[in-house]
Length: 236
Length: 236
DNA sequence: TGAATAGTGTCTATAAGACAATATCCC
DNA sequence: GGGATATTGTCTTATAGACACTATTCA
Image (cartoon, rainbow over all chains, first blue to last red; front, side, top):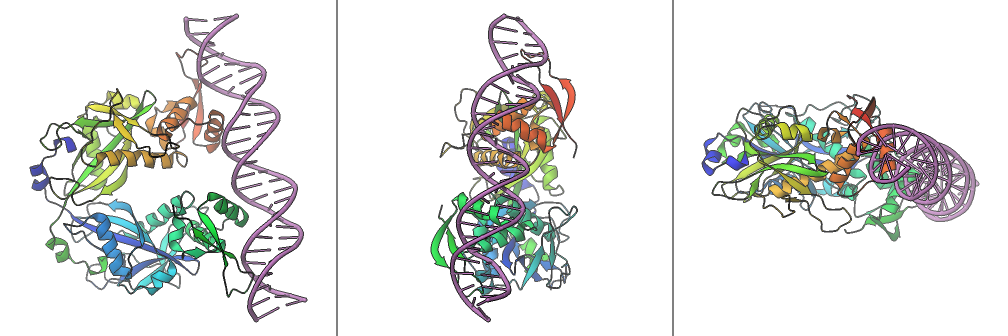
């Protein structure tokens, strides 16, 4: 216990490696997508891996996650939050590794514009909550499941779950959209994350009443129907 | 990133210590309480510390947390869940330490019966959510704030926040109560965790309709008023 | 004009809050 | 009986879902 910990006790034990992995999510074509890259190394060759790296000894966890994300996407100033720490003994055959997982949310246009090391934006399939036994899966554009490295499939599933839990209680969805957005776009985010359609009328009423949004007065352009009003999220 | 990690890369870096701390909560006298012990060591002497220990190299994080809790409370089979990982560089003056915080929920009678190393059950003051700038505080029975070791005050606050977030979406409150309980007791848990009174009528209707509970047919005894029916949480 | 979606108004069903009335225990 | 809380029932109000109707753009 902390009460009996001493400096020498902390030094005496063999130490695990500590790494940071990032589940970088965006929305494209009405579906969630996650940044991954195909492994070329001997261990787990051909599997798809999240961006990640070893924690620097003089670097905080949050800083390490931001660095990993910046390297993978070529972007800075992205929303990122800690998710969960994975610490099973044999989760990585290369040694004892404790991995702190983060998730990040990026608007699709920035995601596409960044020049980073993560080569693929794989689709994230979110099962309908009514479908019992449904699991979040990372798939290619043909719908085939991609084999994920180690327990990183669990990290993606957990990120989606966390996102879903926060969707109704916070304006977190804003990070997946550009600064000016329509209510329809916001609804699409909710539907992609929930894996089921949401009631349009009730959604609009609830979001407008939430106070998170303010109308800009401008409208979208170059759509083949009546253009919707543009909103922005109020600074909090 | 994970895609470029190699075995040697994992070994080459200096490694931080990894420890596990546990926020063990219970409910007594209508208030949340947390297990702490006063530090006698040179560093942080007189401050109050959560149960914690260094992660064993052959031990999973979850196992380490269960071990720490068992040692502190003298109890096994307690609800415990990972909370957050603290990784600022200078959070512990004894060296670079990454701490994975867990929170545990124990029914008051078991908590009191266990013979463990944690000596104090300090009150946790939960501010009313309407009171802006209110912070969760750990206090003695006189209401004086107890100085917490390192960032462990933040861990307690985060545990309460997490608990509050889960209260309405899961039967998590059951872990703070004995197997057979009255609706009034359950309401007291909600009020303690929320830091504000809840509407009794609505609370009863909602909980009964949730399907989490089943009536036992028995009633409480030795109360100086009409005895309430006893319920138990359905196994899920 | 027609296709398509935006946005408004209204009706209904459900859940929350308020409160009154009755029930059941101990003293 | 009196004090205290449990439990039921009813009324009112707020919110969610359903749906009809009008508005606005482009082809």
